[in-house]
Amino acid sequence: MNKEERQITESSKAYAEAKGLELNRDKKVLGLVVSALAKNLREKGKPYCPCRPLEGNEEEDNKKVCPCYWHLEEVKKDGHCKCRLFFAKK
View 1: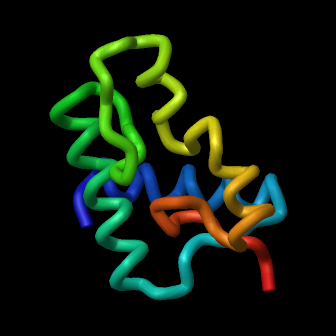
View 2 (view 1 turned 30 degrees about the vertical axis):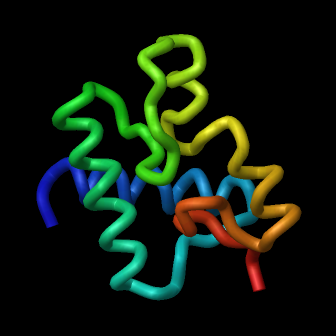
């Protein structure tokens, strides 16, 4: 795990705890999502959600920075966010 991945994992874990959520328990899926977030951070300057395509519109794309604008609604509805980083606590 590189520096960006460690940072994203720690900040996501702290965020999840603060919001009453948990991170994906499947370590493989968690690693894939964190790796994609770190790649977006390195290549695009922000940890954009890997499951949402960027549009080139800064205002709209900023909604896709993890945790994205829609994640809490998705967790409430589906039990997890679209990229499966955040889950409702069991």
